[in-house]
Length: 604
Image (cartoon, rainbow, N blue to C red; front, side, top):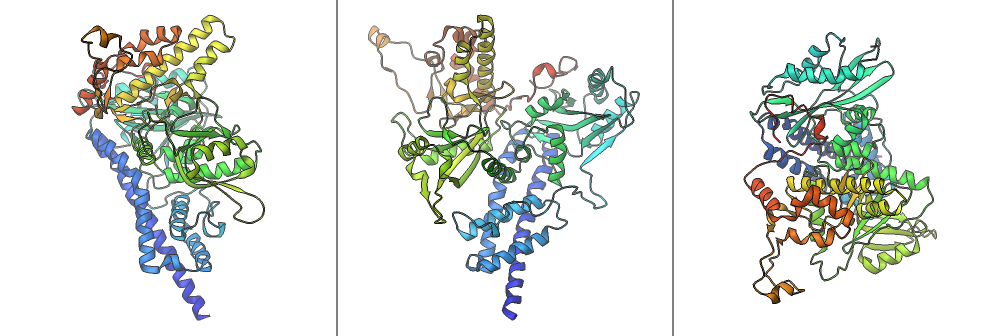
């Protein structure tokens, strides 16, 4: 029995070390998130952006630290499997009364799979399903803030309550006129409640931490009246005099969905119990998957875990097959999808045509850039996975042949269990929300049998949104590179989002030039480029022939976005960014703003 006691003690010590590693990670994550409040108060926008980038790396660094400690102190990789089973049981015991058990389980999986060095991991050694419920977790320490605060105004006290809601966040910076802004919010709420009887349970529930992103802070909550719940958010910004203003009030699930979009940067939020925040946010946005809410809160690894669980569940309850994704095939990425599942799967090809002077590592670097950058609602977030196993029978033969032809290094097919059921293993892939490619959306306007007026309206909406998307990317210091329509998609809410990242660059790294005036008739008539072109040179006036072949599209584009063909537009934005200016890109329509009512307009 003595060796068994030794094994049990060792297993507990390893489990405790892993828990210590997670607790250190979440403490650092939470501290960095909490510091966002000070950066907002002091208008440290560059610091806010830097912190948002750096926080993404925290998780992998802490996993690496934990793995090194376990190998050094316990030779964890050499321990037999029965010890690892005990480690998991001890770890479950340590999760009792933990405030972030779901995150700690994911951390355990990350560390375990690094140490065991297996392509696929037996369910006994990782958390395939959660072992501890996250329902009704609260921080019961005496000085702890609750997850949300409830306020009980009447029609007469609504204005004072709104002021108190904002005051309770204790922002250490003066408002231009908080009472005035609260009156704007009161007016907007009163319009919603004008013909509604206030019920006995009328209340406003507000999450106890502000949500910080870029140059904004957001109050997030809901108004409850009888059986009706109305989600809302209040964006707080700095004006030109560096005073605070409430810039707008957002109502309803759709406007909250836009605020928490998968195409935006992650929020900084100080949360002791993240699952409680997720539960509250799901009551505001019930159609939004939990994995996307965790992602929006900066907890991307948990988002990946939940996405994969949802994906496996979907596979079990569906029977359609993976296929080559519809649309124009990419030169760098091979894209496939499952028709019944609202995502696409992208893997990097092994071979590229001569005009694509790039490498696998450079492409992965571009995707990492997007992950760490402000996506301003215009670049789709990606989930990155390695060694993903699928059932071979779920793949169309044509897709397997496509992968064999263009990305053989990324494909393995084997019967690992020897039971006659083959698996397809993809070495590395990215997963994104599926959207309608913009070129297909435009073509449908001509092909769908719409009358001419409806077709023109659909084209106009799409082309205007396309130009707006590019201008938002420019404001965020991103040059998309390949601006063809096929590289943009339409979301469910009609937003245009960019999703082809292999040629993106920082705007400030590009050199925007006009095409030189030809010196003679021979140069003018030449079908070849007769002038020198550097590796980062961009000539915006040459975009037209590639984008504007259709007369209807060209007419709309030139009416609304002709400046995108002018090098001065791009160069002007580049110079402003180099001078330190951080542009505002609002996650809501401009007509929502109170800006026209303010004495001093917020930064625009």
